[in-house]
Amino acid sequence: MIYLVDGFLWLVALALGAIAASRGRQVLRDSVKEGAVDCLRLIPRIMLGVIGSGYIAALLPHEVVGRWLGADSGVMGLCIAVLGGAVTPGGPVIGFSIAAAALKGGAGTPQVIAYTVAWALFAFQRMFLWEIPVMPQRLVWLRVIASLPLPFLAAAGAMLIGKP
Amino acid sequence: MSEPRHQQQVRLPPEAPLKRRPRTAFDWSSATVAVVVVVSAAVVYWRDGQAKFLEILVSDFHLFIDILPKVLAACLIASFVAVLMPRAAVQRWVGAESGVLGILIATLAGVICPGGPITIFPVAAAFVAIGADVGAAIAFITSWTLLGYSRILVWELPFFGGEFVFWRTVVSIPLPIVAGLLTRFVIVRYLRGSGGP
Image 1: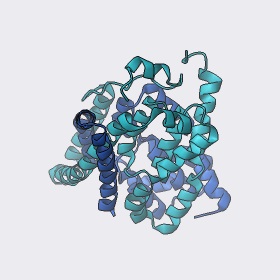
Image 2: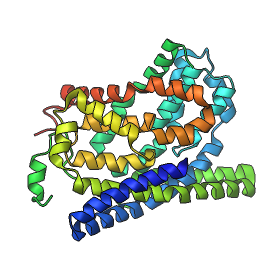
Image 3: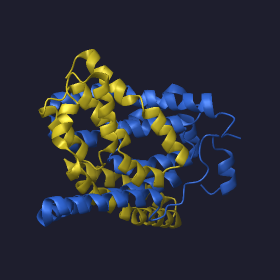
Image 4: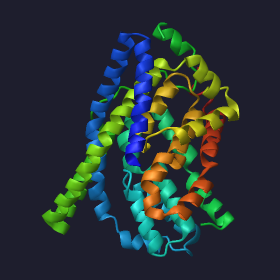
């Protein structure tokens, strides 16, 4: 599955490259160069993000997370879930693995949903490494403000429909 | 697009930033993370021993190698988008005047675009630089983050199983639209007159 996604990503890049080439060799050369230079500049951050997040995750107290996010932890539990999601390091796996462990450890599903949504939206480490350096500052903080209610809305939605 | 740069800037909506930020290899925000990482790694080494330290290093290094081609593809897409996307179309469909439809289009784009959270920010910044509305860009990022199919299928499903993921996704469907509208509200209510010309 992951190769399929990779392949699709490259297919899009190649298709755009072909269009750029049809506009002229200079257009293609300039944009490839700019993209490649951007990627090179991002490499230190990727190393920090991916390799570093493993160490941060190793220090997180996995077993207590389930207790904090218990089904009867209410609004307080939701707030802890959102904060916990934000301090969980980014990267594709860590938030999901902690959330899955919390679910098995007796956490309430709305709390776990709030945690995964908050982690996906706000993981501090991802924001510091990716968002702040590559996006205009105004866009970053507007996004944070506009996203603040979302984990709570997701949890409320899950409570409302009574699933999963 | 061969028109001079200053003309392009004049046509951008007021809340769009006029220039892409210069990207440097290192900066204060990365340095903060670096300090946290070094301290965490030292604690792991001291608490769990060398074997655990190396185990984490090796497994995360594999992940790093996995991610590299994705990042390169995303950077290339972002730079192609910046050059190729017709500005008039971007401004019309997801620009400042695009209304709720623009936010819906951005949300849909977030769902179908490939890649993960690491690849979205350069692409979103490129769209804003060529005239997309900030609210639409944020709906796009939120949608890619919460509803993007690749993350759900590749990463989330194996951990949680179908039912949890299905309902997590269902309750998340309105969220990008909420974020986009909220962004516009904040801009109109609090930022008009302070940031725009």
